[in-house]
Amino acid sequence: MFKNKRLSSAKVVILMMFFTLFTKFIGFIREMLLGQTFGTTYQTDAYIIALSVPTLIFSSILAAVTTTYIPIYTKIKNKDGIEKANYFTNNLLFLIAIISIVVMIIGMLFTKYIVGILGAGLSKDGLMLANNLTQVSLFMLLPLGLIAIMTVYLQAENKFIVPAFINIPIIIVVIAALYFGDYFGIRGVMFSNIIGAVIQVIILLIFVYRSNYKFALTLNVKDSNIKEMLLLVLPVFIGTGVQQINFIVDRMLASSFGDGIISALSFANKINEMFFGLISVTIATFIFPKLSSLATKDSLKEFDSLVRTSLNTVSILVFPVVFVVLSYSDIIVKLLFERGAFDNSSTLITSNALFYFSIGMLFFGFRDVLNRTFYSMGDTKTPMRNAMIAVISNIVMSVILMNLMGYKGIALASSLAGAVTTLLLFNSLRKKMEAFQYKQFFYDQLKIFIASIGMIVTSRIVYTLITLFINETAINNIIVLISSLGFGACIYFTLLHFLKLKEIRMISTVTFNKIGLKF
Image (tube, rainbow, N blue to C red; front, side, top):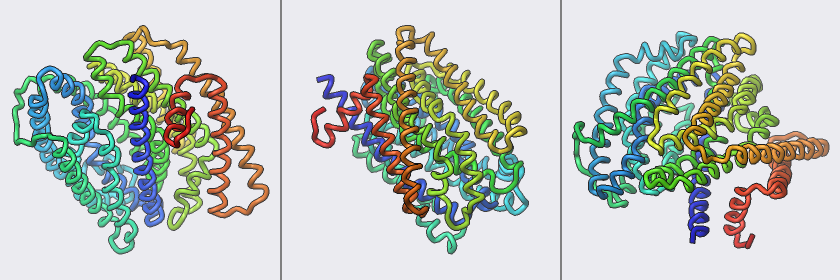
C-alpha cells in the first residue's frame, strides 16, 4: 500500500514537472521574442527593471506569508477543522489585498527614486523609459497578492497541478504582445503583463471555489493565528528582504558596465533558473505540505527519509545539467536567443554569464529543499541567518570579482554565495536532525558526480564526431546537441544503476510504469 502511495506521489511530481517544463519552455519563447524584438538595448534593460520593481518591493512580504501559511493552515485544519482554516485564509486574503494597494500607492510616489537606484548606470533615455514602465507595472501588485494566497491555499490542500500551470496564461498574453512588438512597443508589452495577471486571478478563483472553499470578507488583525503568523513571518521577511538588497546591488553593479549587461545577466539567469527551478522548486513545493504534516505528528523517521530522498532526487536531476550547461553554454544561448536584434556579441556576453551562473545550480537546488525543511519545522530563523550571511558574502565577492573578471564576476559571486548558503544550511540541519545519514548522503553525491562525468565525456565525444560529418545549420545544431545528450543520458543512468543508487530505482520504476512496462 505504501509503495502504491509513493508511486502515486511520484506521478504527481512528474505531472508538476511537465507543466513546469512547459511553462519554462513558453517562458523561453517569451524571452527569445524579447531578445529578438528589442535585443540587449536600453529598452530591454528598462523593461526588465520596471518588471522587477513589483516583485522587488513586495516579494519579501509574499514569500514570508506564503512560506508560513502552510504549516499554520495545516495545524488549524487538523486541530480545529476546515471552517476555522477557511476563516484564517479569508482573513489573510483580505489583509494581503489591503497591503497590496497601500504598497502600490507608496511605490508610485517613489518610482523615480526606486528606478534611480536599480538603474543607476542606465542612460538618460533608459531611466526615463524605466520610470514610465514602472508606473504601469505597479498595478500588478494587487493581482500578485491574490495569486500568491490562492496558489498556496491549493498547495496546502494537496492540489498541485493548477499552481503548476497557473503562470502559463500570463506568458501566453505577453508572447502575443511581443509577437506584435513592432506595433505595440515596449509599453504595450508591459500592459500585457497586467492583463495576464488578471486572467490568472480569474482562473484561480474558479479552482479555489471548486475546492469547496467559502469566500467571505473578513478582517481581524487580532486573530491569534494571524499573530502567530506575524511572529514566524518576520525572520522570513528579513531573509528574503536581504536577498532583495542583493538583487538591487547586483543590478547596480551590472548597470555600471553600460547598456545591455543587465539584459545579458538576466537572460543567462533565466536559463540557469529554468534548469534548477524546474526540478528543485517542484520537489520543494510538493514535499512542503507533507513535511509540515509529518513535523506536526512527530514522525521523525519518515521526515528524515523524505528530506534525504528529496535532496538526492534534486542531485540526480540537476548534477548532470550543471555539466551540460558548463560544456554547452555558448551553443545553448545561440540556439535559444541568437536572432533579430540579439546578435553574436549578445550571445557571447550572455553565454559567459551563463557559464558562471551554472556553477551554483546544484547548491540553489539544495537550498530550496533545505529551506522548506526548516520552515516545515516552524524554524524560520535559521534560513534567515544563513541568507543574511550569504547575501553579505555575495556582495563582497561581487565587488572583488567584478574588478578581476568584469560582469562575469557578478555571476560567479552569485554561484559562490549559493554554495555558502547551502553549506550553512547543512551545518544547521546537522544540529536539528542528528539521525540524518550524512555519510551515506556524501557517498550518494559522489556516485552521482562520477556518473555525471561519464555522461558529459560521452556526450562531448559524440558531439565532436557527429559535427565532423554534417554542415553547421540551426536545425543540424539542435539535432546534434539532442543526439549527443541522449547518448550521454543513457550512460548516466546506466552508471547510476551500476552504482546502485536507491532513488534511481524509484525514478525508473515510475517511468517504466508510465509506458506500461514492468521494471
